[in-house]
Length: 166
Picture (cartoon, rainbow, N blue to C red):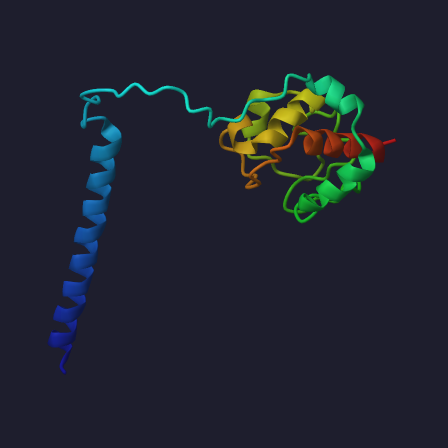
């Protein structure tokens, strides 16, 4: 096999790869451009009751009855990225005295900028919203955690975070 044959094979492979990438790019542009128009008809359906209904109990009441010891157990999910010692940043910022602290106040941690747009202070209510769905609360956040679905778990974690600062 000579150099010319090798060059032709390489050019064929790279050309095919380039055409594939250009086709992918064009397909994404067409799909996201809105050229496909509106739906021609909409089928109305009755609510099947599949959505979860939030409890009518206010979060403040759930937080008042929260257990910090249970929160420490739930916090183990968070401990792979967050530490509770002051100044001990890991993948995420340290959470010592986080309740009541400014959202971007962990010394030495570089924030993504998404949190500063939605909240100023980590109040229990802001923590509750963030822990429910981090990406929903602060779109663009670099936190990859899916969230805590149970309100009791969120309240217990917040009670635990409040207890370690005292």
